[in-house]
Image 1 (spheres, rainbow, N blue to C red):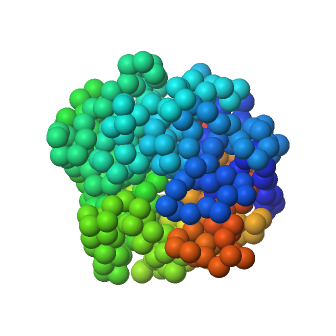
Image 2: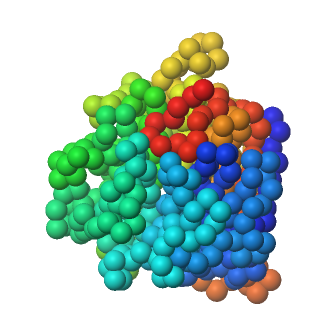
Image 3: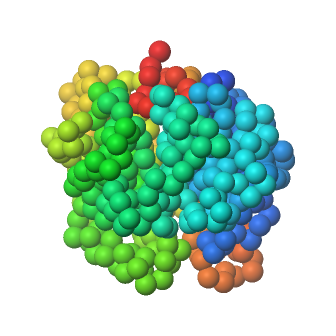
Length: 413
């Protein structure tokens, strides 16, 4: 195992990332280099790394313009290698071309200020782009990725599927043109047909779902940050009260303070696996020492699963046996850990959010935050710049390669 950490190009507190057709890695940043980052304002830009880890975006600032202010867990690369991002600082949708030139207006796309804090982005095989608003329960749609034809499909309780959302976080499309949405504020995930979003269905999940990914057989892997125990349910109720009374930022602060204290096991986080029809896969939910606070999930070309954890200052990632058990070590069943009991560590891992597989089978992990106490409230002056995570960590050759950009379920070679 060889992990290396790469930094630069304006990277600070990277959120969601993705690879373009050349294997370059794009990621949105919560904060800016040198900024005394606080959860009360995200103002970071976008960073691009070459396949060898060389920063391709401007030093210190990253790619700016087009409304880019405070990247989130919303990022995706379309078939034209355009990079789509959502933001917290500007509450907007931002798009860059493959060279980092902004394609959106100076303030981004905000639908005249109607958007709230934004999160997940998904590109479909037909070229459509779907985007979630976590704060106002919004669903945004760009047919064929046309920036001039975007519209808000629904928001709040106005109609389905938004009526089923509670703090919607991330989304993905399966091989049957159905979109799955994780809800960080309730214990179900939502599914709707891309052709008719009003036909929403809900399926039981765990407490505080975030990242999700779909394998080649349309099974759905979902990260449950609070897991499935009574303790996790109590955390979700507490977070929900903060969300209702004080808004998303207060709920997020509770989340980020709670997760680093979790330990792997029954009271920690968990991974949910649903069949294509939404029924639980045998053995799900999966828990263990390598899943203290799962945040994101990636499926590799063998349908095995990789999970990041926003837990603990030293970081760890999990590697689980997928549904095609013939690609796992002998004797393993779906959900069993292939990685060591506490996951893979090292390489300068901090509190991670995203995890991605590149066309060479390398595993990229974004360090998001490094010191919770520096991100919330008034930190000690000497620690005031220690909020944002530093660098992406790459574990070389550990996964089965996938084709990029990844649009829909993973495609091996």
